[in-house]
Every structure is written in C-alpha cells, then in structure tokens.
Length: 176
Ligand SMILES: CC(C)(COP(=O)(O)OP(=O)(O)OC[C@H]1O[C@@H](n2cnc3c(N)ncnc32)[C@H](O)[C@@H]1OP(=O)(O)O)[C@@H](O)C(=O)NCCC(=O)NCCS
Image (cartoon, rainbow, N blue to C red):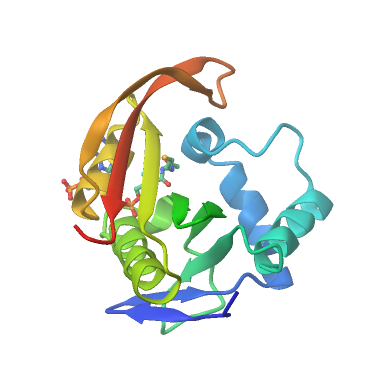
C-alpha cells in the first residue's frame, strides 16, 4: 500500500501521528462524533493512541486512513477521512471533522480528494458511503463529494445512541 500525503486548496491529508492522540480523544468527546462515529465508551489516552496507531499502519492492505489538516498548520488535527474494507476494487469511506473546523467545506473536500486518489492510484472501482438518515450534514457531504444516493438501508447500523438507524447508501464508481 503506497504511503501518500494528499493536498488541495486549504487542505492537507496526512498520515496519523502519535502526537494526534490527545486531539483524537477530544474529538471522540464531541457529541456528534460520539453519536455518528462511536469509538466505544470510556476511551482514554492510551486507547486513543492505539486507535491512532491502527490508522497509521496500512500494512494489512484493507484500509487507508488519513488525518485532515491545514497545510499552514499540519500538526493541528481537523478531522479524519478513511477508506475501509478495501477488497477487490471495492471500498467504504468514512469521515468526521472537529467542531471548530465544520461548515467550511472541509469534509466534502477531503472525501473528494481521497476518492479521486483511490480511483486514480489505488485501482478502486466502487466506493460506498453510508450515513444515518438522521445525519443530514453527512448527507450533504456525500452529495457535495459527488456520491449519488442509491437507496435506504433499513435499521442497518447501530450508532452511538445504542439504536439501529436506517441509513442512506451513496456510492461513486470510477467510471462516473
Ligand atoms: C458531517 C460532518 C463530517 C460535516 O463536516 P463539515 O466539514 O462541516 O462538512 P462540509 O463543510 O464539507 O459540508 C457540510 C454540509 O453540511 C451542511 N450542514 C452542516 N451541519 C448541518 C446540520 N446540522 N444540518 C444540516 N446540514 C448541515 C452544511 O451546510 C454543508 O452543506 P451545504 O454545502 O449544502 O451548505 C461533521 O459535521 C461531523 O464530523 N459530524 C459528526 C460526525 C459525522 O457525522 N460523521 C459522518 C458519519 S457518516
């Protein structure tokens, strides 16, 4: 799996670093991230460090995880964008941004940039993006990143509130 750093206007997608662990722990405490990207209860700094290290290690070949940062301040963590379940040309994409970085197009830009790289350089043919129907902001990110909706999955994932939620399935093809 090639190691990459991806850039765009006002955007840096870089590898995760041990030093990101405290900021990642802070992010997991945000109510929206705890609801829509739950990492499990009672996470402490040691667990956050293990989480960061799993994301920094791409050797299994089934995931590509990048931290979202500002090119002018690469050390500050602004979010996360990841390809998971990479297998035979398929992948899933997931993301979050820290509260202070929201509402300025960062998640949409990060998803678009990682998607373009995955199609061009990783040989991926289809990427799926799922979000809870109630997560309207994530639906907008999918639309802005060019992922058309393909349907509604019923009670398909248990989120941080402990409840199963219906989800929208969006996907992009390399040939779109
Ligand atoms: C969803 C999330 C990633 C969006 O991040 P962001 O950097 O603010 O995203 P962008 O700025 O690229 O785009 C946000 C879009 O959502 C819209 N939006 C933001 N908050 C919203 C809300 N509460 N309700 C409706 N739309 C909302 C914005 O207006 C924008 O849409 P627009 O282009 O039509 O104006 C961020 O809110 C987040 O991390 N949420 C918690 C975790 C999460 O939901 N992760 C995704 C799991 S599938």
